[in-house]
Image (cartoon, rainbow, N blue to C red; front, side):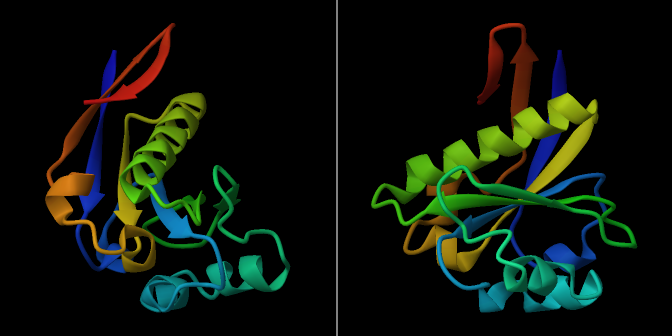
Length: 140
């Protein structure tokens, strides 16, 4: 069984999706999330301020803001030197959560801070298919 994911190239605050997975590097709240934070009534700022999320590898925080994105999933990429692998891993973590929630679709936004110098092609700029089976979840 498959479901659709999309890699959002910009303006995640304008994208409507049942689950927006956000790949975030370790550290303070990225400046690139400010528009999305404002659109979610400060939910991201509150999460960071409470110490509930720091962007460590595989760390997650599910937020439930009002509006067209009922779920925001922050997924930490850590401070990995291999950013491509860390981002793909964050995408897989998000896909697994979408599967657990029984969602038919999800979107992925990679913060510029997590992406670093990787090109859009390196991280996948076009919609990807995510296959799910009893063996697990894989990106293709």
